Image 1 (cartoon, helix red, strand yellow):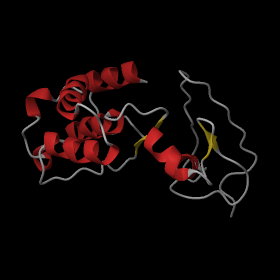
Image 2 (spheres, one colour):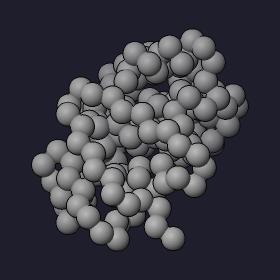
Image 3 (spheres, one colour):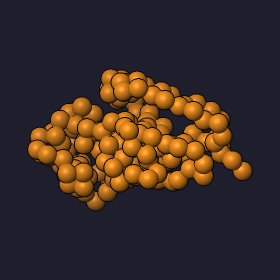
Image 4 (spheres, helix red, strand yellow):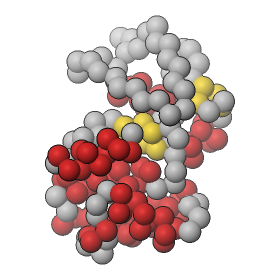
Length: 160
C-alpha cells in the first residue's frame, strides 16, 4: 500500500506548517522521510539545498526531530541527558546552551532530577529542549503537544 503519493511541498525558512489527517494517512511516514529515517520509494527530498537521500549525513545535523517518543534516558538527570545529546551534535559552549534550553522549557529548577521521576509533560518539555539544543533548522515535530499543560503549550507555540 502506498502511504504517500503526489506530495509536493516547499517551505521557506521561518514558516510553520501543520499536517493533519486521520490515523494511517502517512503523517508520521512523511516526517520519517524528512528526518532521513526512511527512504522514499520514489521522488526527491531536498532540505537546505541538500538531497536528503544522497546527502543524509549533511542533512541530519541540521534537523531538530521530536517524536511521540522522548528518547530520553530515565536514569540520567535532565542536564546529563542534554549533555549527552549536546556532545553528539558538537554543541559549542554546551553548559550555557543547556541552561538556556532548560529555561526555555521551564525545567531549570529540575536540571539535577532524574528523568524517570518526571511527569509525562515534564519529559515532553525536556524532549523539546533536546530537540532545539543544537539550534536546528528545520524542526520536525510529531505530536509535540503530547502531555503538555497549558503553560508548556504556550511556551512551545513561542518556539515554533
